[in-house]
Length: 158
Image 1: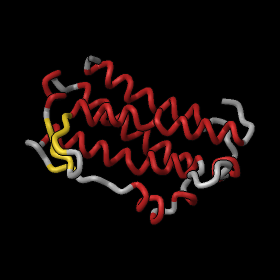
Image 2 (image 1 turned 90 degrees about the vertical axis):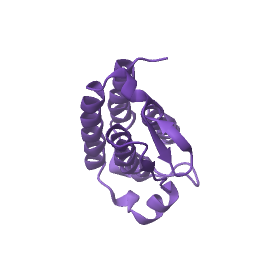
Image 3 (image 1 turned 180 degrees about the vertical axis):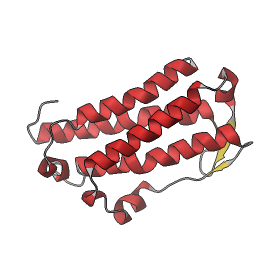
Image 4 (image 1 turned 60 degrees about the vertical axis):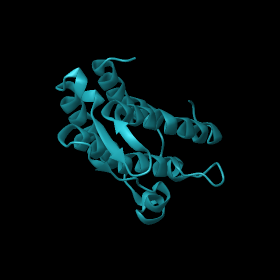
């Protein structure tokens, strides 16, 4: 099992992984949908930016409250209604960066036992801070795979 400091380092690494994945893409390439039925790269980044504060809020609530209720979020409704195709890439990346740096600072100050604190997810039931943090760590790499597929379909280097 990873230590809290290793988890925090992995969480911060997501920022650079995402920036690397979208490097040197033009606005046309960011908005392109080279794979039918899939989001554009910009829409993927907007999705990540919209869920970053949700994941951070869940972690903060677990840290600060006793077994707080953590609400699920419908990613498809967000995509449909929150103008993902019109977002600004740098704003989205800045938001992700800011939230992750703030959360890393908070998480770094916690004693190891704090990572066992629990919240009650509205769909998944009991979840620990460590589990929510691991979910946040996995979120960006999970979506980078889709960005890499789009880069390949557009003839861009991985």
